[in-house]
Amino acid sequence: MSLIQKLESGYLQFLRVVFLLFATIAIIIAFILGGRYLMEHDAQAIPVKDEIKISLADYKPSDDLTTKSDSTGKSNTAAAKTKDPLFEEFSGALKKLGTAAIPDFVLNLEAVNNIFRGIEKNPELGRPFLTQFVGILNTASTNPAIVVRLKKDVGDEFNAILEHSQREYKAQANRIANQRQQAESDALSKQQQAMWSLYAAGVLFLGFVGLILLIVLLKIERNLRHHTIVPAPQGSTN
Image (tube, rainbow, N blue to C red; front, side):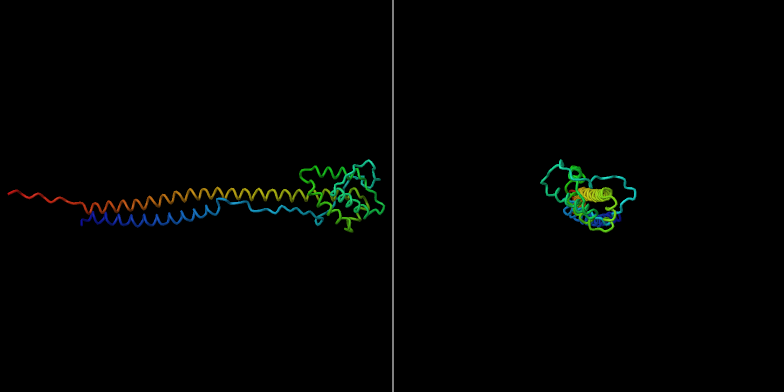
């Protein structure tokens, strides 16, 4: 075997080792990416707890409250009548709040109805807020510090509690909305990454097949060359 043939044989052997190595790595990565696709192609948004719970824990009324309320006024017989259980609870909680400071407190049903309907129609608050606000009012009527301020001005203190509760409720609602949006964005990102993983796995698998075919073709070509029949030299005729 000539030197050139030895070099060629060694070079082909080296290529075969390199191709097999790359082919093995390619198929391993292809399987990993394929598995990633199977796990994340249908990724769902992480559930976000949408419970909103307002409280008076951080309630600190302003010292310059100037908004006045007529909730200490006499009952208005022209006030709208309603059989809404939530309205009844709301007005009852307001009555309890006023009575905690003023024993002969009389509720202005018309004003209460206006407040209730205004909150009910607010898309950022609505009845879910009113349901929790009733509990806030009941808690406030037993809070000594709040009762002291109620004796000074029931209307101002009620408005301060209402504003605090609205801010806290909206803040929690916005935080939940942002968390839900982020969860949906993360799920979409995972789905997109899963698709890219599938594409990459496909490319690597095709590369693996191509390298294996190339190795086979090189081996076939080498075997054919070694088994080529060389015609015998023609002898001289007698």
